[in-house]
Image 1: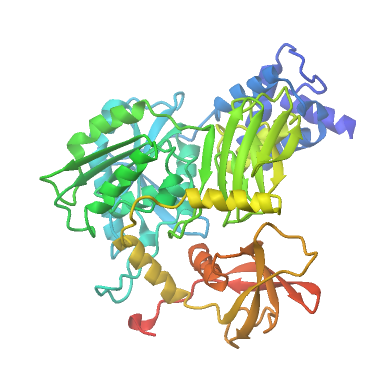
Image 2: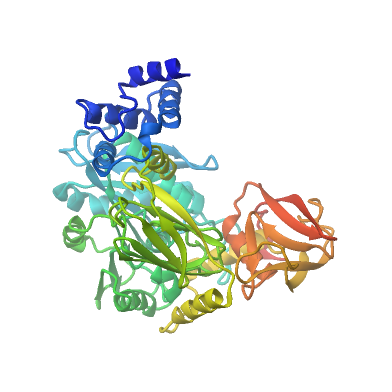
Length: 576
């Protein structure tokens, strides 16, 4: 094994066994490892780099200077990019990007005239309005987004990319209460941005999501679900949002809103006004500009000022205070937000770096939290303390690890989110811990009145309810048996009745079973039981069926079952 490892290291020019030593050429060798693992030119090259990371013990427990060398090599990015496709003069570059479920998304790109792959360039990801009724209409919308941003972006040196949202087309009968369409899911948008980054030298710390109308609403939803993805958002002619729980997740993302007082394509201008006011009250970095003589339209003449504002707002990697607030919006908040990750989708978390050696966490509705650490958050040369709900959950050293940092970057598809190690901490099931979680939730009670659901989300939710109307089973919250390992406030659901046509029936679920988990997700007291399950499945499911694991307690035995769930067809003419 040692002979093989040395051969691999020689191929990659990686010195072995050097620990924290500063040997000549070490940074160059480390850069080779980074390139081979994050941006390999072949499967064999990746496997060789992977072998080094698994076998070389000197890559774990490294010093701060060597971690800096790793960060420098990661920040350098990939070394080469494909040749820029030839286009006719005045025409954008057209790409076809495959989404996670095989969707083909047309994407139109305009590069600055002075673009060169040797330099990083900021990106405007611009989404059109809708939902449209045809792919041709979506393509036309994408081209219009390019036109309105192109001049300002050219002068400032920004790339503009506009996807044709062909997965968000309306279909079937449209009425005042029914507009069946699928949303442009965040994983599809992320696939497009990731593909753009493989083809062009995009600065990952300057990716801005914008859009007009429906596209602006998607921008808000993405940033609230994944506040660590984007450097800023620019909603234009948006329906806004007045849900304070959702907007707390967005607080760290700079937001520039452009709205017309005469806009009649939204429920009311109170929506975008609420967005601006709530973010301001939460301490967010927000500009809200409303024009009394404008309606539902673009604001092309103001884009140069918007870009000047964006130029001084790179992405915030590691804010010292992070909130993860669950909510019922159609795009749920990610389980991982910046440097914290909850075990459960329902998890409520507030994490704060209080000193260079201590992190305080308040949490509810999750059994544990994973904390990702680096030297920008805490001093890793010294022991770190993590407190959860007022109780010490961890005290010790967290070794810096090159394999961990690179694995995280590869998993996140983001070489700028660099973490040296992580710690999993438990949320204790004690009266004191429960009381701390309950008090935290009470503090999060909205202080602003929530408006009615915006048009875009109302129609999208109704479309989903057509395609996944029922679980086909009924039941009530029930306590777990004594001795069963649980998170605070964790419960089960006692299945009372099961429809023979329920998708859970073929999986082996029976009336009388205690349903403990679905898809690895437990139930928690007060979160709606089966109604809560139906709600998160509405947001989780896609057109292609997926297998979900089930944990069931039956007659004292814990059974592992499974169920296949997916969205069905729309109801014929919108009727039951």
